[in-house]
Amino acid sequence: MKTTRILSVAGAVAAASLLLSACSSGSPLDEGSGEVSTDTIVVGSQAYYSNEIIAEIYAQALENAGFTVDRQFNIGQRDAYIPALESGEVTLFPEYSGNLLQYFDPETTARTSDEVYAALPGALPEGLVVLDQSSATDQDSYTVTAAFADEYGLASIADLADVDVPLVLGGPAELAERPYGPEGLLSVYGIEVGFSPTGDTTFEDLEAGTVNLANIYTADPRIETAGLVVLEDPEGLFLASNVVPVVNADVADEVADVINQVSAALTPSGLVALNVQSTVDLMAPADIAAQWLADNGIS
Image (tube, rainbow, N blue to C red; front, side, top):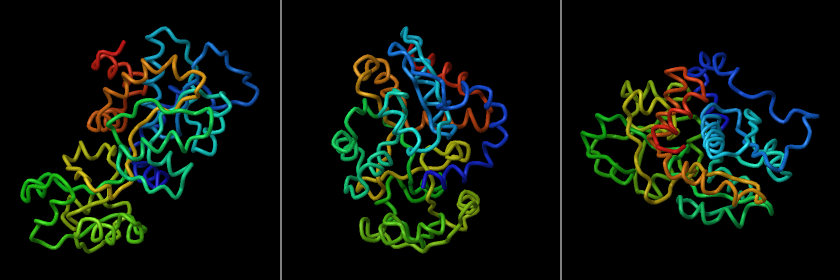
């Protein structure tokens, strides 16, 4: 699902990618780069602009606290960077709790934020730990326009039961078969919806009123720029995926105080705002991170 989401925002960030490419520090996990000093914290990131911004925040926060930091950004997906974390080649990485848990425990029944976070320590391999998770999420959601939310007083998915017009859900074609798709909405919340496979035009269809409910990732910058409302999910229909730092256990105690401050300050709306600065304002990750740290009093 992460791959689908990255592709879905590719058009929005294509113009930014050339500007930002010079901001990463070399090729990720270069062969022959040698062992990193034990005094150096190696911060990695996925090949995903939002993840790189969080990694840069981690890196600058640590540097401001006196640590030596080596950036290894744009590594790729978990098959590439998890072994690097286990070996100590990379020591700190911004992750997403639900996706990380499913990577190690595909059959997990945890769904809510607290359940997922509690399950992570038992699922992670020896040598890896997680620090405090953030309230910020980057996960599937059901989202509506502000006008629709205001008209029907919508704050959570459960409130959809009070809507007196037919509900039409838009999203990728595969959503029809997902456990959190139409059948999940019916079984968990008692909400019956029609389904329209909107694919890459989900936002446009939602704004046009072709659908009145949409499956959108919670950190998508268009949530802010289009003034959309993400509905709360009190019953855990979606697997919660909070931003959470995963770290090699050898350095966890050293970096915990600094990185936990970042997690405490990073909010859902704050993460969306960071992504807007990248995709709309075309700011470099280093500048976005420096401004965020200053604004949040983390130095």
